[in-house]
Amino acid sequence: MLNYILRRLGYGLVILIGVNLITFLLFFTVNTPDDMARLNIGGKRVTPEQIEKWKVERGYDKPMLLNAKADGVEKLTNTVFWDRSVSLFAFKFGRADNASGGDIGYQIRQRMGVSLQLTVPIFVLGLLASVIFALWLVMFRGTPMDFWGVVLCVVMMSISSLFYIIVGQYLFSRVAKLAPISGYAPGLEAVRFLLLPIALMLVASLAGQARFFRTLFLEESGKDYVRTARAKGLSEAVVMGRHVLRNAMLPIITTAGGALPGLFMGGLLTESFFGIPGLGSYTVDAIASQDFAIVRAMVFLGAVLYIISNILIDITYTLADPRVRMQ
Image (tube, rainbow, N blue to C red):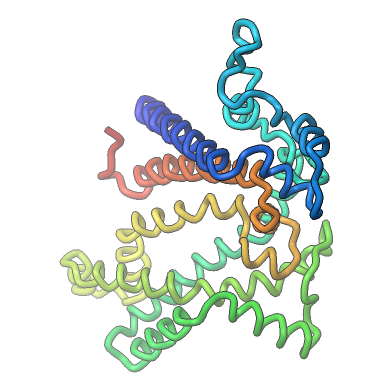
């Protein structure tokens, strides 16, 4: 297993290098440091002196890839590419391009906990609810209850999550006054601000996952070992829980593992609409203000989390199914 993990980490490193190079080329091909300075300084009249000052403060005054004026190793290290791209592998994210020029690493550490407070309950409760609902539909397969349950899932899937957010804010915040419409407070006070977005995102994500899991469970419930279990006189609830669910764990693990990067990266729409200061709103604000330093950092962080989640998925496969071996 150790050899397998090391090999996967090696593959992941190659992928990270590719993502990093492509991201760097895209950002600095589309926009030069002078263009970024004009965007972030703002105003109709931006003087060359202001542009040069902005570039010096953020390290964009250095050569892009090779510093011919430097000596030795500094030919490579005293460049924009090293400061803004290679340094990401040491998780040194540098300063933001915006007017505040804040430390990106500090913001990520502060905001990641806020995002986890929102996304972990949505992930855990959503997975449990969708699995239970899907098992319930399969237990009553072929009945009106199953039919109308599938219809409800299709209707809910057809509605945008943005609709749930807007309607939920209007009904529960403006009309019923049950929860704040937006904002955040640290500590236990955070519960008051997070309950509504968590509830709305649970409703928005339930239908799609439940319908997918229902398809998995239906396929498993028609196999020979399930018919044998029923022939032994086991109740339908025992058959569903002990046999069908257990043998459908691999696709469930894949779905759950694929959502892990999103736990740390936060919810883009949810955090923005509810004013939650997590990584999702941080990314949206950076895109809106064209802060390329923050966007590059978030792209790199997302790639790291995606690679780690895939390795964890493979390891979990061996725990869920003894037939799976890491070769």
